[in-house]
Amino acid sequence: MKFMKWIGFFIVAAMFVACAPKTRHVSTEKFDEAISSTKHPSSAFLDSIKELVLPIYDMYVLERPGLTGKISVTMTVRQDGGVDSVSIDTSTVNYPELEKEVQEKLGQLKCPLIDYRSLKPKANIEFSAEGVAVTQTQPRSASQIMKVVRKEAPRLRSIYNSYSKKRSFDGKVRVKWSIPPSGDVENAEIVEATTEYPEFEKAILEDIKQWKFQDGYSGKTTVTVPFTFSE
Image (cartoon, rainbow, N blue to C red):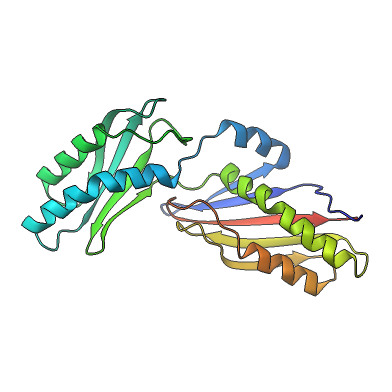
């Protein structure tokens, strides 16, 4: 049976953080090591912060209707999920009492036992008319992106197997897409293709558009990944 052989992945992750993008070049072999050694935060961690802060906001917004702003915090988290310290990096809410209570409550938080990106996670807590939103301030790492790519790879293999039954072919499809904080795939496009099989290439692109990456990261990340297919 025909199969797809992965000759190699090379990923360029341009992290659009602040004003200057960062570009990384990482080979497949290095990804294996990076994935096993890099810890990642999850939405459960952000949800825990939101659940704790929301009642505080609801109380203070009664005193000051239209209260909005953002508090950026850095937390020191133990391996058991307890919080040792919480520091407020910046704040635009202009409400010292609210800031102090948020800081104190976060210090009492028992974080879910998840894989943390670091033991000093950073988060943005934003207050608006819609309520409270919590996001991470770290950009996505190349290894976190590649972890999802590896997870979804069998679907591309199935597509290749299906189309290669019609006629024999091989080649490379280089796909570029962006990942916003929501984790969706945006602006996906084929920037290079050598299979000479447009229908197959379109099927690959449509599948990648359905991929879902972890949400909660800051900024928008643009990646370009070449996939090599052969019998």
